[in-house]
Length: 248
Picture 1 (tube, rainbow, N blue to C red):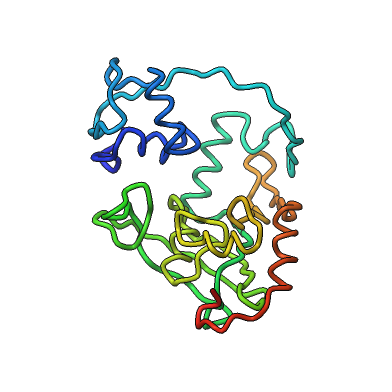
Picture 2 (cartoon, one colour; picture 1 turned 60 degrees about the horizontal axis):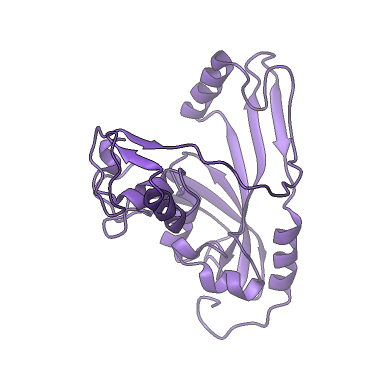
């Protein structure tokens, strides 16, 4: 629990930090008594404070069919790191900005330029602290590069490259230039996603390039978009042209 999280509601904190998949799921955990703050259960609207110890009891996972997970790279050292030393080495590469991370994003509307850089500090939004935005009291350096791959009738397919790695960076930066990721309800992409039949945001990690900490060779891991995103892209290509200025 850090000072950056101070003031968040307990349910919002659990959701933002990934302890629960959603705020409603976090509330169910709290009501069930599975969450304690400083060793005792508190209400969902408790405002967390710096230094507090928050514990979530392990929950038994429901039985369900789990789809096969595509492994794009594995050896005796990495899936991505199998030892603490290799983990630390990869983290050092990240900090030094020596790892290339590329994504595909389908966004609402059309950017003015074919390529661009969004250099805008990000932090917790002043009004909604579960979101990251440029409207923050604690800005942190954040840089995102984009390139337009294809302009569709009401959307655009972008190649994204991260220079920094802040929480929600791509989503927040694209929302800041009024081109939210389709299917991202938190950052303004709900309507676009609904039109395309998306049940999640259209943001996919396509390439990871790094120097192998053991062999010192450059490794390139690539992943194609899954079926549901390809289907949404096909729908986007067939959309009628909108008369609105932003493609919505």
